[in-house]
Image (tube, rainbow, N blue to C red; front, side, top):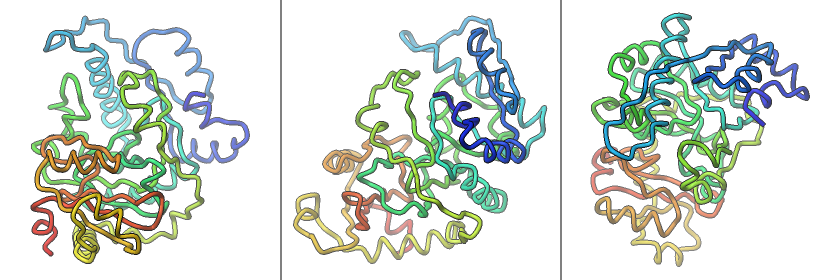
Length: 327
């Protein structure tokens, strides 16, 4: 089922009409495939855009996949259209191989107020890289992160106007993760994902689909986001609260000691450097990857996840994390 099929599913057509009237929906097609175009045009509540770029792609390194160049080019074109031509204040970007949670739009609507007022937030994402079912517990919990998660995310016009002129030719998501692009801003991400990626055959070639994407938990809990107080996510509040949480966690030395400590609710494991982090992350099964000095899903070098789907939190804490957290 494609994303618009879900969005326009007859069972929930009343909800979808409400969504479409509140959030103008666009499909942007890259290229000229007639079947894709006809499918897109068959949705009455969705506006169709087509990006046709017949210029040959010049990759910068031999053996590179041209898809990454085409994707970056399409993103820039589509976001320029929406922000500059249509003058939207905010845009949510969703790839076509994503399934969405029932509270997807409500979540973004609630987070939009935060995004508008807190300039230290660069974007809001619906994705947690460590959102596999064994690592999550609380569907209401949201976090700040220094790592751009992508995969269903929202940004504002001022942020796009800053990024658009220097947008890269390829690998746009890794580019957003560079320190000089991010400039000390952070991202809001949920504990439990609001999107699910079923695209085993997408441009990423299903390389870690089975390990990381297939076990992702898509939120199914009903959350009334209008009544949730998200002020804990502002820069100062979150730093203080997260710092206290990490400081009060019981230090354990490595994976083996953690297995013995059955009765603890919250533990922290110190890692010394990237290699050490990768070793510990591998033992738990969380993402090992770093980009420009930041582990996936990390905040101030700390990666937090639940232990075996329970309330029990594990913090992997970097050598400089406690200082950065001011504890």
